[in-house]
Image (cartoon, rainbow, N blue to C red; front, side, top):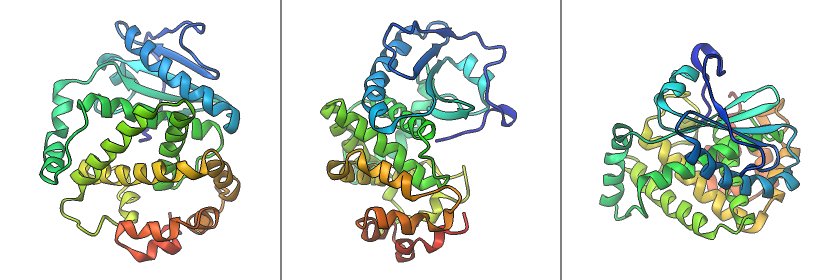
Length: 290
């Protein structure tokens, strides 16, 4: 979930953020800053992301650094104009920053009540507290960051979301975090069940692109759940080779060929497009004007 900062800019002017010592829980190419009172959460998240980063830097050879920023509500609103809660990634020259909330307010958590209820009605129970799912999203945003600094960004929204999740999943596998992989898979089932209501045949893939930034939360979670399930399945057999081959096959200047080249790299994507209930997606025809 990539967002622009206040006024189209992203920065920390006027925000006092502490730096976590580089010798403590920080991996290669990973720095950490945090608001007053958020040191413990910054330490916990950075220790986790450092494990992911260590497994990714070898195969991906990132060109620049990733920064984790753990911001309280006051600092968050100085940095960006978006509601406090969901993590996001922002690109700057030579740096990709993952911005994470220092806590999850009760009012924010209640936004998910109806979705969890819908999943329950569909027979899918939540595997644990909602905050576990939200913290897994931090890993997804790290996936965006490491993709961006490794030259893997495609500028096609759904494909960038898939790549971010794939890199997160593969880093979890490399780190041996089987419990988090299982948790991610179970939450993906919840997402799909919660967002499926109202579209038994699935939502069209081009609906994830337009209207940009205004996708309703149930549908957004459904898309993300489907993409997560695909990443989990594909990473079992393709490992780090898939993103590397994809990066070589998808030059950003040739966006009209993205879906076709994706199928050339991994033919199993052609039948997979049917998940979205629109057979035209298999050829990539609806993606050429983005």
